[in-house]
Image (cartoon, rainbow, N blue to C red; front, side, top):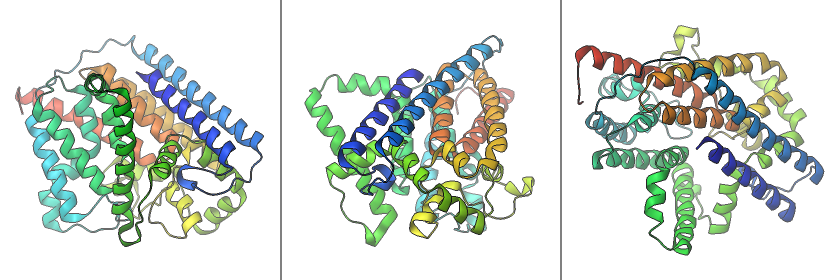
Length: 382
């Protein structure tokens, strides 16, 4: 499965390059912006990205093989479907009640009552915990799928779409078995319409009154750009001096602080008392002069613009990868869990959002702690 994931992204990198060369403009986050870099520079960037994708895959496989020599007994996973169904409903009400989680709404203050009512959602980081639950689930009943649907609907209402990708990969076998019964032309048509629908819902929620309908060609171009880095990295390389100057003159960015802030619901234990501005938001600020959203820039983009961050980045990545590979072996269906970890780490490297990795590590640790508690109390079904 891991190689298939990498292969999909490689294919989209090639499609993105083809679009840029033919149209003479970027796609994805910089759709319709004319390219200034020579084509050979963009080609070098594209080849380098593909090489790094393959390097990541082989490095992960090597580490996976080394960790597989450590014999660890898996924790028995009880049926958690009822618990997660309740949590998914609570998560939906949490968003409807507070609006927390919508891009641009990070500064919303929760009331004491909200914190008490929605404590299970907040303390468990449910929107990441559910990926671990899904990967480890051996009781795939109708209640399980209903839980996933409620969660995904909530994420779409938040204007977030990447959980669709992760859940789609985890349930790819079930999805493909269903699609085999449908004519391929109809399947492709429905997929294109689905992409258009999701993008329009996403931007309608994010932009409110300034929203304008996105046609099918536009959303397909945005989709290709979202699953490739060629466009975004090429744009960053064009503007490295000015972006670097803007960040160093106006902001005090730290990869470590961005990572640690998301690693716990109480970042003050790490001495972080003020909101850390994500690197992706700084790039968005450069283009739109406000911090209302974030632009995928990749970890490579962070290093190119702020090379002094490289030591901190290496420390974060190595410690996280080793920790994840050890912990996932304690869980049922460790291969599926390892695939989730592979995807999350890849998306972190790909987008440059440290919150993805930090939230996942926290949720993974919380899930393990939850299993320990259930084992102590001898619960079979929750």
